[in-house]
Image (cartoon, rainbow, N blue to C red; front, side):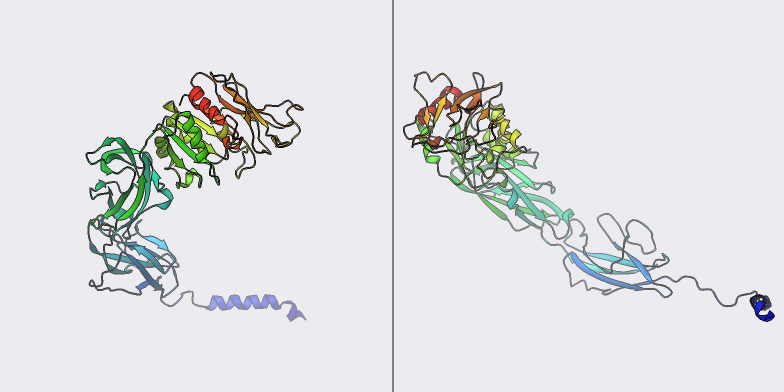
Length: 507
């Protein structure tokens, strides 16, 4: 029992005695950490087998006394006199844990072919690099660039004065290899754009600058800032299809295939532009009759009923500056829509130059909520920055403002102004019922023109205004909030339009 009790002490004494009896000098040879080695799947390529500058590369490494933790890769770039030194530690080496990559090797600017070295070196788990690494020379050749008109930034198929073109230029040898572009219209008189960063240009057609053959000129602008170039195209044909040609050149003067876009350019024949923004309807013939009665039968015309302005399918875009400069060529705009919140939301921005030139605009669009895009808090400011009113009326009991037909009789729409000089009564009779025609709230700078005979207007006190104009002797905007085609045949609609355009707006 005494031995068991002192057993731990005896074991400790034993091991201490063993340790003290050993030689205190360790034997053997210490080996320092050995560098890893690096290998490429292909280390030699015949120069006769020249390839495109985009290449796929694979490599691997091993380490005799540890493991490979990462790699660093480097490419010689003759454009900046950069050569990859496996023994150097600088920013030219890029760290990666991958064992493959796809690269576009940098062809020397202006050269059609070159031998470009790719280098890779392994790094072990203690951070030691392969001092030699592995490398291979890729014999590459120049490839021509490509260019195409950007369909999302191209003009509609028809225009009058303005057309803007976005384009996409690419070079398989890298963006730095793009050099310049050339543009031509209708003939082979190419003009050169030296800035390879440009991806957008516009032409502004001068219909008054007529050549001996009847064609007109167009000035070239570059970039979205509409930078003038001083370059003019001399062969623009009005009321005909015009072809716009575009091609790119790289640093080695190789050129892309030519891309072409066709554009019909209309001749301006009037100082009044009619815009049909009434989606899904065919009412322009009736409005043409109204305009003819008022003395504006020979008008210019845009049909934008099939799309919204930002799509670029109906009017020249972008709105600024292209569409702005386009619309400023007319003195008067007659805008017909079946919704306040279709393209009218963009008119305020698109007519800045037009309004600064004292242009006049008549707008006929219903003030209803039964549209695809109802007026809401997000776009109401845009609406009332354009039309001469400060807001919409709210029904006192939360109901709808109704102009239903009762007993076969149309509701009346009554003028609230002093009748025209000849004293004619301009009271209009609705030929259809309208379930929710919302009245306008008139601001201090606006003048009411017409009120609607709502079916409960005797029971409630609310605004009944459905038409207004800017106050003053020279207003620029007049708005009528019921479709002019919704009245009976014997209503004086022609006379009303004549009054609006000639007496109030001064078209």
